Length: 307
Image (cartoon, rainbow, N blue to C red):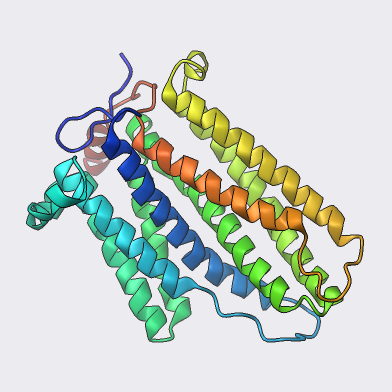
């Protein structure tokens, strides 16, 4: 019998449950906030490596906005974890947040996003990356691969989630910078090329870890017969579409755009496609994967602690 991931209150995570969609929406907001915050900081750091002259100031990253959005999403997820039935019911049970793993992880993420927002408000962007990295760590402990292959599953999630949020967040920031430099096409092309080189490595790592994660979570016979498998296939198709749009955007760079044109339409569509990919990723986190756990996570941690 496949492993069953239960929401708080004992309800199995299926598409027919409204709380699954609520959880997916909240987790999409969390992923989007993390991408905008952490990816935006990374994008600005990458843009500063541009070797040519800076024709216009680089835009400020939206890291503070992303952190606030992530904190709101974490609070929402914490209340869902407390009640298993959504926002309103969870308010009455808020004092018991850290008594169970899902609530504790949401609480840690809420504190981490809030700390990042505070540091950004105090104009300490470098230090704000640390609590944002804690969110990635917490997501690795919560994610499905950890329930199937303890310890190794968390590592798979780290190596998959981090490239995903960096790809999406860096692209958003570089698009904003390219629009700011649209009257200087040569410099804009150089900036986009700088991003393209980094994105190629991120995409390669994302695909490799995505395939490994899929093999862990979904037996081949379950790809078309389970909701999890079908959503995973749609996500894979959109990642491929984003890669094709990325290639089209790089080809466009060879055409020497004129002043004022800005980045290619394909590159802008790539950013929108990645937003949908994050939404499908959020939905997958709220569904039950059809794989069997190799060994209970608690038993593995107890064995490691006893060494």
